[in-house]
Image 1: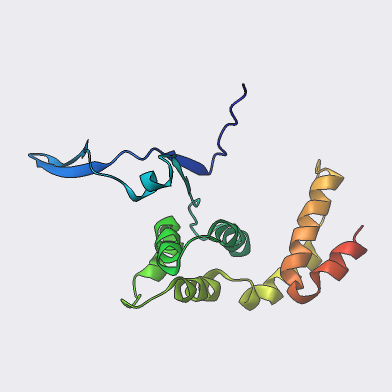
Image 2: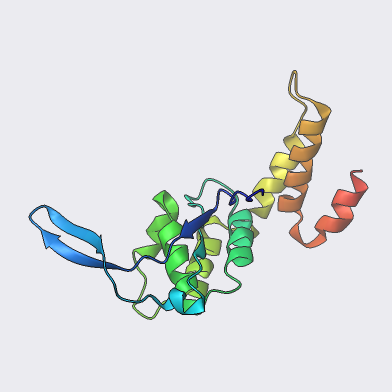
Length: 166
C-alpha cells in the first residue's frame, strides 16, 4: 500500500488535546484527556494549510493568488490571522497601523498600495523596453522573463500580448 506524501505547504495535525501549564522557564504544553472539536468527525487528523511567508521582495500578485487558493474554506477571521502571520520584513510593517476592526481585505488593500503593480506600470514598461538578452542566457529564460515583464507592464491586456509572443 502506497501512502501519499503531504505537499510541503501542508502541515498534518493529529487531534491530540493539550493544556498549557506554567513552569519556571515559561509555558509548557502537555497532553490532556479533553476532547477536541476535530475528533467528533471520526478522530481523523486535520490537514492545515501553511501559507508561505511574504516579505515584499517577490510578486504580490503571486502571493495573493496562493492565499486565495488556500483560503477557500477559511472564515474571515482565519484568513486575516493567516495573512498577518505570513507577513515578514517590509511587508509586515503594514500591520503596524492597523485598527482593531481590520480585516483581511484591509491588509490586502494596504499591501496592494505598497507592493502592488498598478502604481508601478510605467517602471515595468521602461524595464521591458530596456530588456536585452544577457550573455549566455537561454532563449527560454529570456522568453519567460519577457512574458513576466509584459504581464506586469500591461496588466489589462496580458492574454493578448502573451499570445503574440508565441
